[in-house]
Every structure is written in structure tokens, then in C-alpha cells.
Image (cartoon, rainbow, N blue to C red):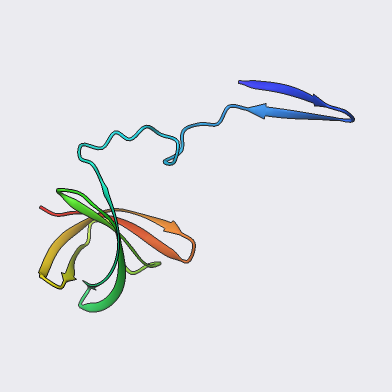
Length: 105
């Protein structure tokens, strides 16, 4: 849908914005809890720094340097209390980093 808005000496076209991840209603099965912790992950045998963004009953969202993880890959997350293996379900670029959604089977 397009509406023209008249501003003196200028016509501005206004368009309806489609849904984006930020505006889409949250349809997740479980609540996410914000976290801000540094941790280490192991990806393809390399130890890498990461930041935990949120957690849920079945997974995590982490932020890592761009290109360090890929969809479908299994990685290990190292916490003070132990390690967890998780599968990378999705990634998206955020500035110079990437965020990755992780599922813990």
C-alpha cells in the first residue's frame, strides 16, 4: 500500500513496511532469557571466544566473529560448570560479527 504525503515543494511516497525479525510477533515455543556472558566455543577443532546473548530450555544464541560457525555445524560451548554440544540452526551477520542460534539436543 502506498500513500503520498505532500510536504511543501516535495512529495514523499510512504510504503507499508513488511515484517522484519524485529517487528514480527515472537512465535517461539519457549521464552528466551537475555544473558551477557563471555565463553569459549570449539568450532572445527579451534578454541574461539564467543558471547552468550540469550538462552532457552533447548538452546542458546551466541555472537562470534563472522565466519567462525556455519549452519548445520556441531560446536561445543565451554562454561565454568562444563561443556555442551549444540547444533548451529541459523546464523546472521551483525556488524563485524555473526549471531548463531544453537539447538541443544
